[in-house]
Image 1 (cartoon, one colour):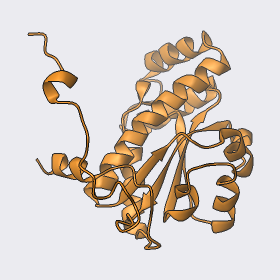
Image 2 (cartoon, rainbow, N blue to C red):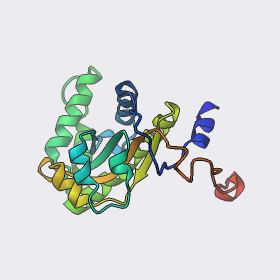
Image 3 (cartoon, helix red, strand yellow):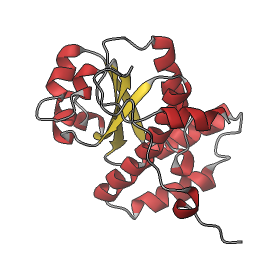
Image 4 (cartoon, rainbow, N blue to C red):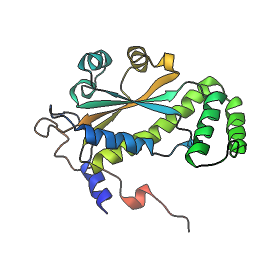
Length: 209
């Protein structure tokens, strides 16, 4: 299985070269994330691709992760702060349109999802959305490995700084997790030549037959 080889190849890169990732590969990674699973299928997060060096310099302030500034591209996964009934209605209407269904065919789905989120607080919405963003994060890591693009998933950043610099709060978003993309600087990254360390499969997993 080629996927296993690619996942054995990938690691969280610490040092990047200045080689740029092609926009074609970035587009494929973005499309992969867009195709990723999400609970209720409503995609409660957005993906922001940041290449502007001045913006990235602002985002890197106070962070120990130099990859924010030094990589080719920075992907910001931003979860919704609040999941409104209007958003759910619009999304379900889009589902009906894309599946060539008559309007109101999916009203039972719309009502069930709306009712569920009506019982939740905005804080719970934000936590739930961030968890969904992490599913997209996993998809991005796998897609990047398939394309032999190096990646670094990161939580070590100032989310409030990201929210401010990128104007996320005004868009009902909050920075949840980020990924740097680029190509490893094998000569200066101490992890580049190290074997991948993982638990033995029989210790990591178990079966109930």
